[in-house]
Image (cartoon, rainbow, N blue to C red):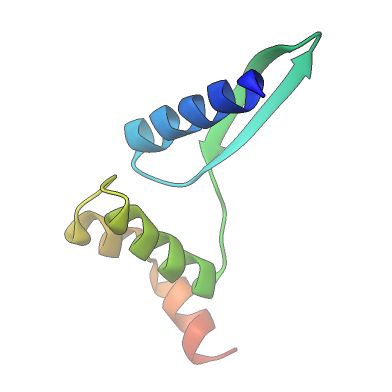
Length: 81
């Protein structure tokens, strides 16, 4: 549907603007999309690495920027599950 296209376009804009995966709250009422709020999404170690790779592959950030988003605690989670 048209609302999904609008939602997808908005999420792409937000992720490009913030350079990171977003946790987005939204609602649809009577066929109208309302974007309520967004924040950087929380993630565990494995997800942090996957998202970092995805962000580079999608052209949202550079490799250097992406590596900086993987925190020491993410690596700790990967090394000590």
